[in-house]
Length: 357
Image (tube, rainbow, N blue to C red; front, side, top):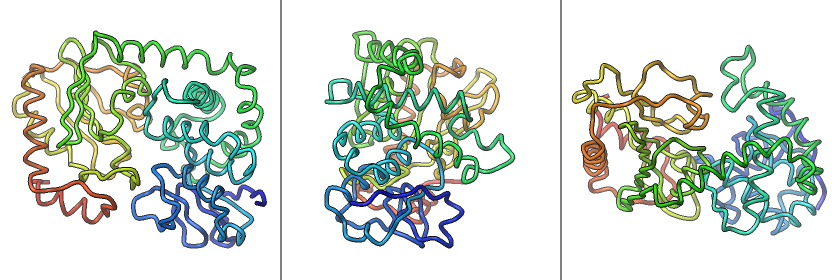
């Protein structure tokens, strides 16, 4: 298998390429984005997994291209592009790369899984370097240029540096150690007796009741197989989130359509007496978050970890909140069965039938 050259996304209009974790008609698309035309034989939950699958199968269409691109920077896209640049090394480290994509995109960490600890170190190295040298995820909205353009220097930097870090992660401990330790502290909290998890499989909902907010990699370590997370902290502080698993096309399991949390926000505001207001993001957001707002968060702040933002106390008791959330989801999903390959049109139509918005 030949190695590929990174192509900045604006150039794909004139230069055919493998398009990772993105859409474009001028190339071979390997993406888990909803409705992406990825060959069925290569479909996996992550885009990086699809690239690795294509390499393992020596997918014939790869021979038609010399370039690889993506329209945004994140860990899933980086791993996919890097794998095509370094196919033999990628297959040698396949399981580590797969874990990186799952942790980076879905925030689902299982420290008992093989290679998960190494993958966590690599992900945290990328996170730290990205924030220190560039801008945080979804921070491009604060820049003059959009993500398509602003992400290009990130790709040039990380694609050049990643081999050494992959092969010798301990040499970069000073970069990744702080976040790894923070994740592990939160992981210990979430997997201890101080945390209670309540599952509602028929709703795709898991309630995580714990003392204080923790890093997402720790919080979502208790949510694998679920798509909606209700986080409940001491002092009647709550957040409800639709995971990224409902934004993409999952191959491993069927899912329910993503519900519109803005309708639930309206219902909660009818009983909220704290003086603050419940609000939520729309269904096409990467990770819609329902929360009680003192002031509106930027997308970068919403994407940031829960312990990095203030979470306000509600007048609604935890028992009543769980009742109202589950009641809303039960009514919304009534008569709907989980399945694969929901289109955005179908998701929007589903919510129009269940929404006053």
